[in-house]
Length: 238
Image (cartoon, rainbow, N blue to C red):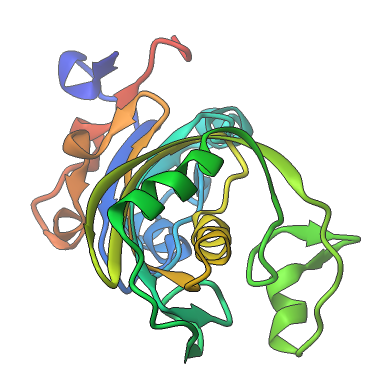
């Protein structure tokens, strides 16, 4: 892979890796970059919820936005922190939190339940998601108090225990396209019997792109920032 810094005349199109900060939507980052570059054709390769942080792959220019679906097919890796003993209407920290079961499971119980979240599993998309069913975004229905049936989908998971100090449980999750980490948290809490919701989420990797390769979001607010020097030109495009 090469960057524009290797070229005599930098291209204005390419991939820009940003470490998304908490509190910002994925669309906000796209809009910020549009304002910075003057380019309207900018998209991303996978939404992150506002509370989540980590790898955001921004696609700059028509040659790259048309490949959005190709990049979105990539597998991803997350560091997910679950809070046990409570449930959330949205399966994450942004929903209405309700205490569920104060039972404190042992590490052995955690490991046992974790075995059910390896390999190919069936996962039901959450109502609070951008997934469309019959042309309707699920989160729009959920906000109106409407819940509809969703077909479980096959996803592939590799889930590792990183740390457990009740009520917090941190997992390293590598997953296929279409996986909802919020649903994983909800399903894990059900299997454990304590209830659980997603408290924190960091995207560590998107395909071949890693968090350590990402630029700080603060650079987008610097008047000296020249985005063309940081655009990536992946070998799959060349």
